[in-house]
Length: 238
Image 1 (cartoon, rainbow, N blue to C red):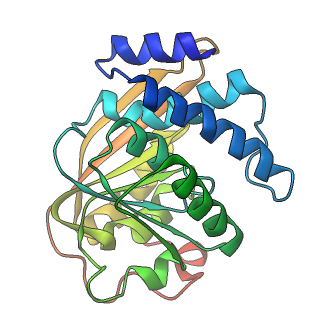
Image 2 (cartoon, rainbow, N blue to C red):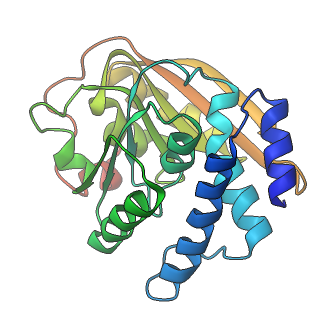
């Protein structure tokens, strides 16, 4: 995907980018490649693939969810900033928080936000399990996103405690999402969520399958969740 295709295909989805926003994506790509030589941020470094598999893919939740209103968004395990930084570039009014367990990624994100001139962003070096128990953080976000972090039964425990009641958890998955979702239904219910919608689409050009799962937070998450770091992964809620 070249930049012209990127711009055009987003335009078809009703997301029009200004020259400034296109510059931000270009600089994002440059910094990703530069920093990737010093630390492992991504296995994907060729420009067409970064624009397709990282940038376009990250923006895809906006094809199914309205990001145009003022919202607070927390991205769990964002790595090099996906999906939240591309969403923030497209929708600058988003109040963005990112939590990641690796300090070197947080260092990169600080540098990235500074270079791109992103405002109203906060980066936290923490495990999602401990972050989700903090006063003032727990159940405080309108939207929580996660992309390819863990299977749904585990991911729900990392993310739903952060979502405020009546907020939305957006899980981004590849093709095997249906089976994962079936196995994660019990956890979603226990944690106060209800599956609202499951959207499937193919990434343009390479036609690989993607799934976007929207989960509404209907009830407060019981105080015992999230459990201690590592426990959700070892003993998923069943």
